[in-house]
Length: 390
Image 1 (spheres, rainbow, N blue to C red):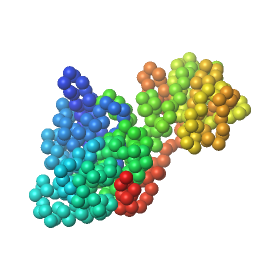
Image 2 (image 1 turned 90 degrees about the vertical axis):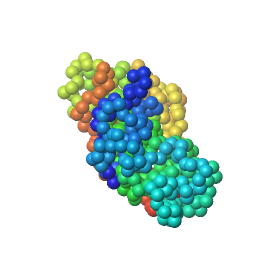
Image 3 (image 1 turned 45 degrees about the vertical axis):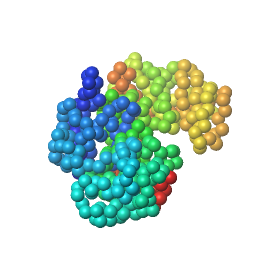
Image 4 (image 1 turned 60 degrees about the horizontal axis):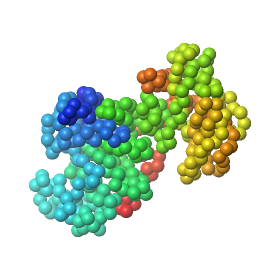
């Protein structure tokens, strides 16, 4: 294992376009770290800079405490899995897996034995004589991972390796990846634009925007306590409620409604100050009766999300969404009260976009390195690999 760090890393392309702007980041040994952000935010450029496939304009890349900024990719002790897997089409599965050993001039018998052993652990032993075109997307993904394992790298760099898989296979492959990384205990940096992958897999994550890192932390902390409006809006399976408000004698006036100021923020909220109130739909409940701190409105939209419904209410100059259980049977035109959980209400400065600190939200659980995400399951690598074959 090796830790990874970048210091004041900048990458500027022709025309003055900055893909990375003075980035500082440290990834711990054995950590599963996710780089999350929208397309064009710089996450892949950062990964390629760590790999040595992009030369930074300025700054440093350190792996295991060693400055590798000018070191060729082959001398960095890394293995990279690309979005399209980058398998060699004219080679068999066995030869693809063994290729890192071939370029090190390991004897053929020894490298094929290593390939066979790795393939067996990933449920690929029956495909060793096939070529990539004869495999499914899930199988190709596992071949690319097997090749990375065979390289005996200190750091794995994964560039959206699940993006070419269908939804069911992505879920199975996600479980497989987490189990694999836990058993190998290798430092892993994972690029994705899919926040569900980052939340499920990562020990820590960084959210990026336009070449800068907007927040770093454990997934639960980033989700529950975003540092700024960008992270608040980007995170979440459903859009967060953003409501314009004004501080009014110890309360927040939102449209025709008033809600209490979250505990711990009163000192930073002088009367008359304009703020943005944010609360996720899953932290808003619906009531048939009037509720203090609630919003009265008519149901104007019901979106079915499986076991849950996303309900949109309008009233009193406010539009607010709540996620409720499908058994609540909410209907269009119903008059309801939307009641935010006061411990999950966030307040932001609309001019800077930064969260106003000191809120007394429940502390997120500590996420230890190598801990399985709650939906990643347990079991041996071989068992998981069978599900990811597709």
